[in-house]
Amino acid sequence: MEFSDAILLLHPVMAIVVVFPLIGIVVNRAFQTRQRRLQTKSGEKSKIPPVVGQEHVQLGRWLTVSVVGIVLIALGNDVFGTILTKNIWEKEPLKVLMIGITFLVAIGSLTLLCRATDRLWRGVFATLSGMSLVILGNQDGVYRNAERWYLSHYYYGITAALLMIFSMAILQEIYKDRTNRWRNIHIILNCIALFIFIVQGYTGSVSLLEIPLHWQKPYVQQLFKQKCNQKTCTIQLSLINIGDSGDVERSI
Image 1 (cartoon, rainbow, N blue to C red):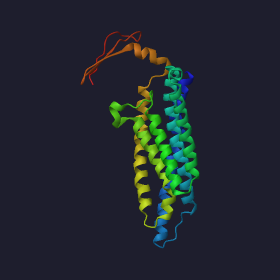
Image 2: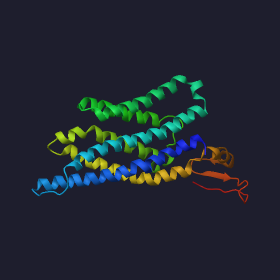
Image 3: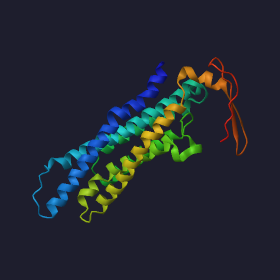
Image 4: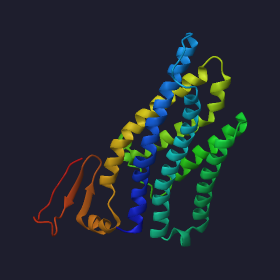
């Protein structure tokens, strides 16, 4: 396994080791926080400690940072891998410089968002973070699987990251709003995000099967010859040194 393959696997490894455990803990703290608030509101004496609310907020911040972080890792692997492979640095140095600046803006704006308290600055930093992710996601080399967008790991991942950023941006409004409007928005959006994270377990596994390792790419390019029209794509697979020989045709 080469270095580029190790970087490719860093994204799913971080998701399994960091993100998904955090999701479980955050959901648990969110449920406990809501239960305690409802019990207190009804006049009951809750056995749930008050600290669960603070834990939910802190862990939610860590979850947002982790989700955006692994998205940047995946985008960085695809974008900079393409830059090095196609020597884009020599052809379009200004473009490469702007891409590097965009990565820095994404990291810096997310860091400042974690510390910002004023509504205006939270909006500014959240917007910069989200725009940076979208801009980087539209660069050459990013595996988007646009033909099957409804099963695209990229589109679901970007959506989940944007929802996490927005949830962090409205955190202060939740505690200021006495009508619970922002709290309800927070709950609805994070329920959607939770569903997306579940779907990501499937789409991520599919992407790992579809993206070949570095040493496999020349063989895959040699074996597959595509002839496509508007509705049918015939893939001729020459089975070389695999056991049998022949052609496999698949209509899509």
